[in-house]
Image (cartoon, rainbow, N blue to C red; front, side, top):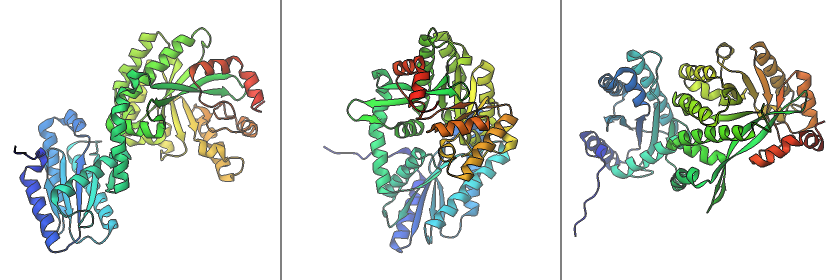
Amino acid sequence: MSTTSIQLPFLQGNGFSRASRRIALAVRKNQNLAVMLVHVRDIERLCASIGHLPANAVLDDFHAQLRAIARDGDAIERLGERKFAVLLGGLRNSGHVSLAAQKIKRVASETVSKHVENMNLKLTIGVVLCPAQGNEAHELMRLAEIASLDARRQSTSVCFYETKSAEQLFEDWGLEGRLGSAIEAGDLELHYQPKISIRTREVVGAEALMRWQEPEIGPISPDVFINLAESTGQIVDLTHFAIQRACRQLSEWQEVLPELNIAVNVTPSIIQNFDIIDALQSATGIWDVRPQALTMEVTENALMADPEISHEVLTRIRDLGCRVSIDDFGTGYSSLEYLKKIPADELKIDRTFVMNMLSDPGDHKIVEHSIRIAESFGLSVVAEGVESAAMLDELQEFGCEYAQGYVICRPVPADEFVEFCRNSSLALKASGTT
């Protein structure tokens, strides 16, 4: 019985053959070579903007520009619709590769700007070193592909192949299938962390935080499965689940907590996609809840990934009646010029500043000035990471309106949250906050 090896389409063309010959030559001459696999990630958006034929012309131009900057000893090959191999000869160290990666990203930006205004080509670049990590073309391309996937998992644009990181990637692949069925199986649920008014010490809202209790593995950290969902595209399903579950919870709580607002966290890829508007309209309609009872929380860095699209999506969210909160404020790079234009209702000061503000003069000033900035733009302020009564007192002196933190209450299941709200004055007193 004969067997036939399976060849991936991008490994069958002339581009791969030429890349293979270049790698074989480097091996024979005992030369150091970096194999870089460059993926153009947002080709769909480019096609939607200008059409498929013009988009292909952009990629042809990108290929030509890469060849124009190549040095003697380098090789640039197009392997498919959105994939390029860049082979760097005469490699001195990893810094040489990093500089090349930055140049490739700059060429991508300059190329697309000639064809489309206010748009960038987002790249993922996987890197493997020859002969240190392999000396055969198929294997080097496979490792570079793994490095590229690992870059997506880590939400970075450039990633060098590492055995340990690849093992983690394979573990993630095992979780990927489990995550896909977790919603239907009921393994995912929302816990709720109270947000209180600092002045009255009353519960005014909650942040919905997803938890995953995997039947065989046990509890899985949100940092793990949220990043996994983001890199595999499952984040859309998770976000829609969170919005539906939060609206269902609001509907169930309308009698006992009629004025409560629930905040749902939104990742960078979601805030750059208008599908969230349909998801919000659907969920609020199905569960008959006021859009004003929902807040979408988005990080400062997520907004800066594509400010134009983010601004438009957030505007549409607010047009529905939902609130918008800027999470982790102070850790990103947004300018005050951009902040004054952003369609938001609230700033959340990152916990790293709040937790140390009583002992670190720098963090103390950051918290105080963040509150002043928010006030000047007409935004309410939430301080996260509040862990003592002294912090609450200081925040009240600053004029901060709201607070979250373990001294108030940890994230808890829905039934425990209701019980906490019913006895909030006793609970807060027991925590030493009044």
